[in-house]
Image (cartoon, rainbow, N blue to C red; front, top):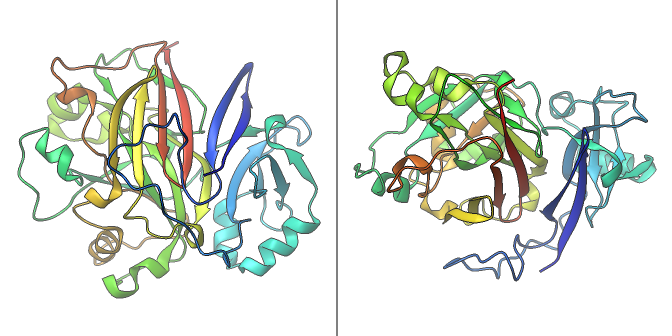
Length: 335
């Protein structure tokens, strides 16, 4: 397996993130357990379908849209036609061939010379599914749910793949939850499971950061504030087109804090799969291009450890999903 080490620069901090750009996500040091690493993608699928939003001094700090080179070291800027915005691009209905043609003609810059932003920065909706991994239910001694539990986060929670997470002063119970995020590719209403995946554009890595006291004990037991504090949804590093992900329900997923592994699971544990989620939601809610669905988290969150563990300023969270990528976020004090 080949892993491209991508150097990312944000502000005065230089971070190195490992981005999987071939058949699988991992390395000799990744320490995936009980999950096959022998998966592969069709060789006929174009590789230039990993979309990033970025900015640099060359762009005057303006948000741009680009596609990663196959080795993950360069970004080709395709912004001019799409206003530097992934959602505008998705709405355009541009074909794979059009993207390849634009990328081949576009000026390419080194990834380590730009600041990567979240691949989606202003979706109309961020929809989340709770208790959607069997292991996460087991660690809480809760039965497998018969129906999915939906909640939402605000778009102001979104930060980039190596941006900071604020330890807000009103909480001391901040927790991690690595999740596979689905990006919607076209308007979806009253969709059936049989064609639900046609409405998916691609995937990215997410952290559903949660203030457990506000989620569970305060605000009348409603999740909104505990889930929607600023910076509580790191996304990235890229929006990986669905054509590059052979089976989103067979991906290794893990999270570590300060280099110590906390979560290590597989999307095969999903109780309600992506097609089921889309069918259920669109019976009453219209999904729009660029909307994001966080599909749930595996076992290993801090709240249910013995004793409980919570994030504090100075902690570094690494979140990664096989074939999709890796993000790294530092927890900082509330200023």
